Length: 109
Image (cartoon, rainbow, N blue to C red):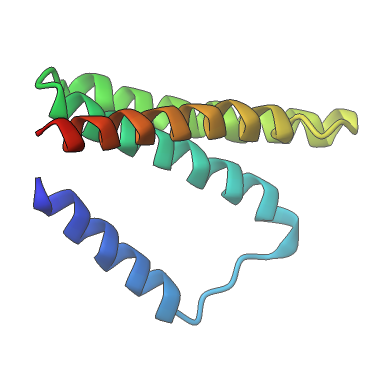
């Protein structure tokens, strides 16, 4: 259970101290993709706590969510509508729901 948190901390520290910057025109895509990835990771942690984690479902959901969110942001840019906001709202709600369930599961244990 501690290994995912260690990986998260390692990734955050590498990203924080890295000199890499994202061009402004890609910031919508990256932000939505990161939000989708975090949603998938928290969903995976939740299913691991509930003891029904399946790596195939996790990996396919992880990449599908990222691709769908990026595609939604891209289509929105092409038609001139901020469709990425729909992905932000949807993944944001799921993120907070998963976080609340993880918190409840930790408190019960």
